[in-house]
Image 1 (tube, rainbow, N blue to C red):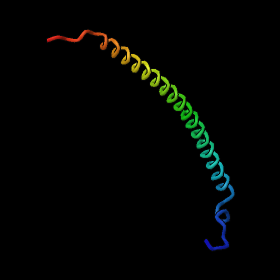
Image 2: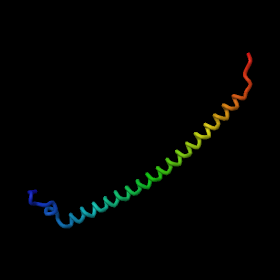
Image 3: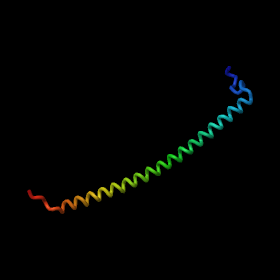
Length: 81
């Protein structure tokens, strides 16, 4: 190919159309995958937010249980040996 020769000059007309059709299909597939990955990513973000919220609630419950146990232990009579 010389500098004045274009790639499409060396391809028959039908081959260019086939190449463009194949590229269109690949692009459509890529866009479909990108949308699916975006939706999956959003679902994962929502799930992570819910899990973090649940974890925070459980941590608060554990802290409250610890406070209550400490208060009960403080009320126990001391051992005499």
